[in-house]
Length: 390
Image (cartoon, rainbow, N blue to C red; front, side, top):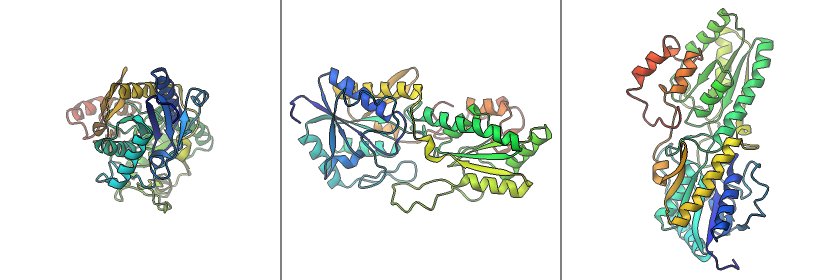
């Protein structure tokens, strides 16, 4: 760098999602006003090591990126830096890689490195912090499964995409008197399925957090038909456990990515429903449409606040921390806290209660009866790891 001003580095790791560019823009503008130069490392953590790849950032570079999905810095969820959380023990990064990253940070005069990512990317950030690199985290994932924050940016945009899909499926399902199964992302947390299922008028929602059976799913469909409702919308979270079979994996991966790729439950559910009750069933897998496109206003706002406050943490020297949303304010928490456990749907939470009260089924025996009385009994012993806004 030609300037001798202190420098802040930014990188975006893991899967892309709407709002990443808003973080980059907000962090850059805030850092400039505080007297910092800003550089963005390309392709996530890979940009920190040979060959080192980065680009200067300023208000002109980031002037038109607020509305854009994805990330102008690029990202990677595979390669030399891999850390898994929630699927087994954390993978320890090669100490030689950490040394090379530390050398890059020192040679470029980086006073603080802002790492934007989900559980795996923040687990890497924690290891960088433990290695003496000045790191600040920003939580990002459409899955909304990080324990330290009520919401992550990207989640609202993903829910909006899934809700729009349900709106469209509603009309064709009603026209042809079909059962439509929509498979959505979320990995081991059911937040996207739950929120989109309620907002989009779903009739059955299958979550990782609530055990379900085909018998109860089919019973709900037949119950609706007895009431004169000749179509049903089923929302299936990709991480919902198949009765008697566990998680369904997409075996077409073969790319050496850092975590198992879930997917395929939607088609299995549709095939089983058709076989059991002889209904016309169609499947839609929303896939990466949930991760692309323009961020919603909520995600732009949240990502902007995250970016600005991440720079504040660097300016204060509060390293090893991640920004987090604790309504109505932005706060900070140790990165280790954010990755300690996944935030999952509380089966006795208010959103599940409301859905049951409306007659939405979750494929379990509790679909019948008083949802509020049942929730009151369950509230005394909430599911381990339940968090976020239920």
